[in-house]
Image 1 (cartoon, rainbow, N blue to C red):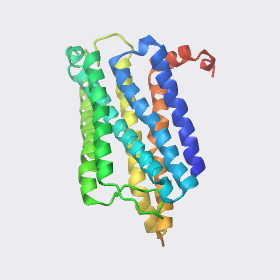
Image 2 (cartoon, rainbow, N blue to C red):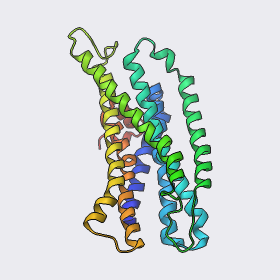
Image 3 (cartoon, rainbow, N blue to C red):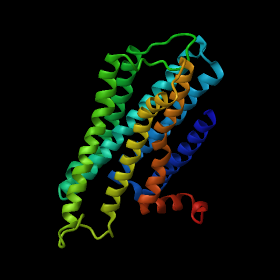
Length: 286
């Protein structure tokens, strides 16, 4: 399982670093929408050090007390990354919704300064909030494997999982369904266009790319949550170490979206492909 994690780290580092460097080097990518995607790429990239720390504790320090703080740091980084990814997708969804629902007022609502402030505030809340929550509800038992947070504590689930992860995903789902209904209504009118500019379907491709990102998010989270239950029903676990191994396998799926997001950007947006080719000329013919 460690080899799978290593490959996932390499893929997410390569893809997300490519997106971030292309954004930094190519000024044509400095748009409101791509700034939201940049936040998503940064959160996906942050998953790599957290995953390395968490797995490093298991394979280097084991379950000794000496690995406690490294384990806590790794789990905290993972929580920050996953939360940042979900909230960044929420910001992308809000941007698309306002752009399609109120195309003439979008530029007033989503200014460069407001989006920058929203991203900064979002990350400050995530860093500070998760620090408090994970410090308060962390349980460490020396001799156990590196699973420090008490996921079965009802208070931790109530104050962390529901408002921080479940509600944003619910809002993202509602927004995207609304977006698709608006797009369908516009497409049904022969005289209407999805956007006011002559950009050869640029806005529709953005909507489709957002849909693929959300679909991957749903698939990865669903497999992560349901696989342990299906596995235990089919192959009952007899001890805690077997249950921990099943969790290791299921956790590989929650990292799937961080690996696939850069591929979705590259396939769904010709501007990002051109920017990557411009930033890395050697990749142009590959």
